[in-house]
Image (cartoon, rainbow, N blue to C red; front, side, top):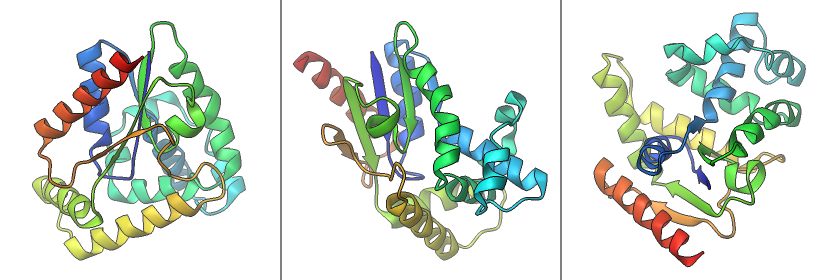
Length: 208
């Protein structure tokens, strides 16, 4: 069983995907980390994330980079959004994601194009979203909770810019698959969002 969880940044898709993996006993892959690793590698190489050649060269990152906390930073998240617009980067990372999705027993993957590109055959597809204002508030609380001094309005602008890049890129844009179940977490707390997702998956499986 493949469970595809897509959605924009800070929508709660990662939290939901991890909870689904735990609940259904499946391995989980946060595919956004792969793009963050590419963005970070470009930065480490002294390159330009908007240059397709620099971005493609950074796809040859060491697996150990995926364990670094800096990948979760806002700066690297922005770099990930920028490198992800390059078709060559998406092709380079496709096989790694595809292999994880099709492993024996199934898997849960979260990202922005899992249900549309990586695993369009997934029997369960969720699209997790929330308003820009709520997603910015969540990210602001997370960052200030870690002692990082940030301005809420700046985070909101950054998230809106990422959304625009992700939704308008020519290759694998962020969009809900036609058969995806949309979960809007704007007014949900963490537990309520997870509960709604589990119920949605169970409903989809029972329909099959």
